[in-house]
Length: 363
Image 1 (cartoon, helix red, strand yellow):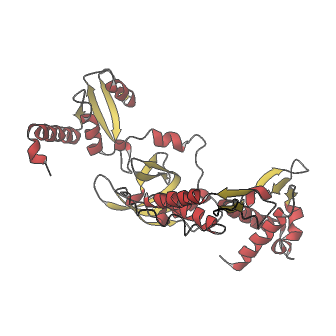
Image 2 (cartoon, rainbow, N blue to C red; image 1 turned 90 degrees about the vertical axis):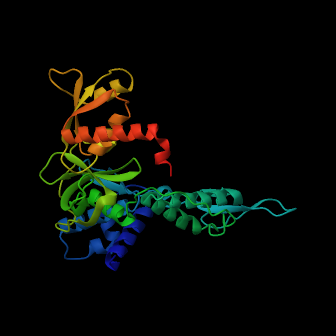
Image 3 (spheres, one colour; image 1 turned 60 degrees about the vertical axis):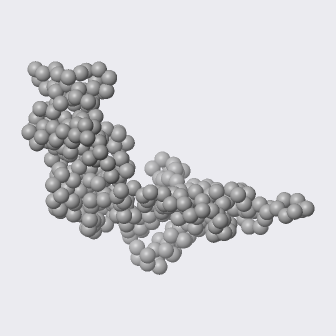
């Protein structure tokens, strides 16, 4: 970060924090020398302020936009209680002496006190979170512990705890990729990357407009739309490489996410066989039963005109879809396309062999 920007940020924060009421941009200008510099156009000065405000918000600074004295003028406010952390203390106790609390520090701020065993539990919990293998959670845990270390001896807490290790997930998304995609989402900038297809294993170039990130079945996925298309596809982050954010027109969005798109609903509606970036294949499934789990599966498919006992499914991963069909114990049977039918029959044979000759599959 260049020092002029850092100085602008510090001046803007100081100007907002010293006021206990909303303030307009024109009232902030005299307190931020970079904004008040002579020779600047009003439009350029305003753009600089808007960019500074958005970047500070992205770092977690809760700058509020509120109605100003004039309906057409906005005002801004940064509440002290929302910006500063409470002062943290550690309770200490000595034999024969009353419990004592360290009370130095910012007396105007609320205080949060920890018992020694409570602080040790916090440190142990942060260690467990870092071991989960989720890059975003690990980053948040590291950030929280750095903030606690400003007031509390967290380095000493929990040192006598056993060195527990958790089994990591099979594939991890790099923290650098997560941060890059998060920035692209916030700025609404396109990204380019190489992607290894789940089905064929082919490695190809992609250009996509990120709509969101979601976690499903122990994997992180990017929901994104290819440029010029309307279909939102899903890319597994562990298969993405050499990601780059469009550097053109910084500060200007490349696209807009449709108002009707809801990431939570999109992620919940995905089945394992629907995930992927390749073209979907229409699979036809015959239903031998319409009760219980088969009835729920029937609702997932699309109607086949003239065949009430059949449903169409749009499949990107035939192997996952075949395994899903197998779980219904013969109530759902694929009849097209041929490749899916072959995969399903192969799984049936393997399953029968396993149950008829279990010793052959023992480790």
